[in-house]
Length: 255
Image 1 (cartoon, rainbow, N blue to C red):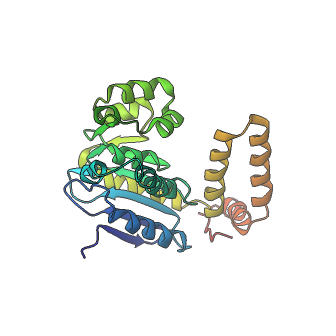
Image 2: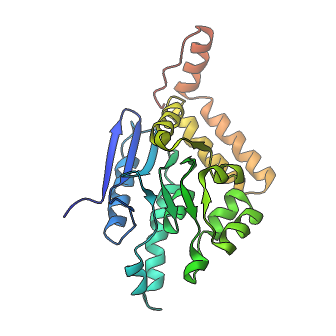
Image 3: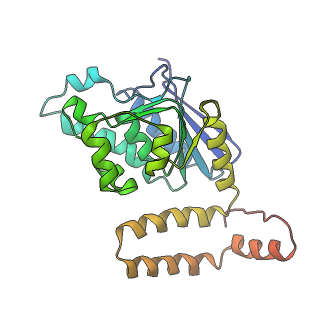
């Protein structure tokens, strides 16, 4: 059977392609492949950042397979939703930063996939849509509200309207909006910049930001101090100080 995903590792950056063009729709067959790729990334210490994108030039991911959704029953819908959540949470809770390179249509489950990543680099003209209300369903209310706030979420989710990458940037749903033919290159450039930093600190910073989102202020500050104190004894911290005084780039080893 032809693979529906493709994982490429180049130095400290991995790139996961949803490889089922033209629309790269998430199917029952694709989900385990994505999870297996995430397991590979998780177990490869050299990888410090992951880029997720779609094969071809038409879509990042146009959502789930409507044929599969049409067959759902009250007895099977929860299992379907949990399979999706396992996939999306797998991206969210990956220890390293994950960057979505949105190179085309990003709709329904595809939008949820992008929102599950830490950062989003989108094509200026990429079409995004939270398609739930168009299909009589509720989607993306939690992740979109956490990222951009309830006003943005209500606008986009209650209307189900299509919005461009440029608008996604203005609304706080994207971190970069770039020319359509530069999406993967710019996302990879961002991934390499992150991967050049102290890897233990990057992982801890991702954790600390998640804690700050969930905890009360004083508790989150206490956790931030914990991370700082523990990292102060790391080899990479000592290397950064030495490199500063020697006026050279630091060479981080993740220890």
